[in-house]
Length: 121
Length: 258
Image 1 (cartoon, one colour):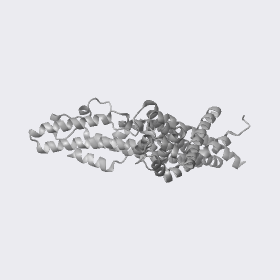
Image 2: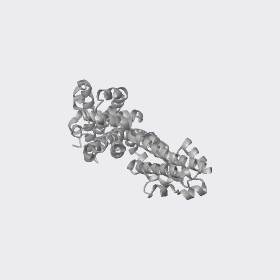
Image 3: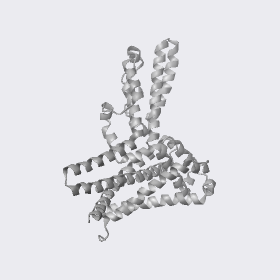
Image 4: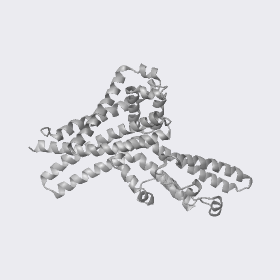
């Protein structure tokens, strides 16, 4: 196990994290409003827009993130009646793939970082 | 009128200086401004807007008192009491949730006592004692929270610069070179981990509260969840990221110098 350099592993986890945050900021800056216009009847999306609309780029990142979460696991939001399933289904598939895979990559990276921390601490 | 002038100065500048407010809340500020700042900053704008609303209510109460004092007729009295009660209730509601943290007005019993006013004392002195400090405190807290991320990031960068500088002035040349690699990697790792962790934590916090606990979406409750989640996520992953960054820096330094 110790044959692999821990610093290299850390690099392979942290570099994609930084990269993914930059990509996320770009997507959020450019497309947040567009995504929201595709989900007008989802109260969860509208609520997050209300909270974060004055928060600049960081707020847009949070809004995009919550939309990704809705697209990734619509069922739990549906149970509370927070989203309109038809709108979620109509969401353009390529955009959905982009957002959901970004979210998945980021979660995997966070889990990898956590595991790495506990192994090499 | 001296106090009124102080309020206005406080509200206009609402700069951050080392006064009582800053000292009183130092532990809170410090914990917020460290690694958690990334997470809090993402959601802190809403928090600061909530504080802003509290400030507006306080100003309305002040204005009401001033108007009543200006007219001063007995017939205006009932209307004054009714309006004031309404404003007090509004303020109590605003203070009644966690997002009021930082206003310096929480857990002080009834609103009247917290503001340090009673009709009589107001009529006698012509000012709301203790009120001026509180409003400027709110404005300051709100401003600080808003700038939290940037202040925190700046502090991180400054601390990194300082430790590199220290290694370069006190240590040998290779220590200086090593510090450049290790400290700057730790900074990048901390910022990367902190921002991703804060983002994930904020999202998870808001999502969990709305879905599991049934908090109204878009309301102050959801916001508080997002703030807390963001702060916790930012803090934990900021620390881990900065620890991982150090290892990366160490690794890169050894690769380069070999």
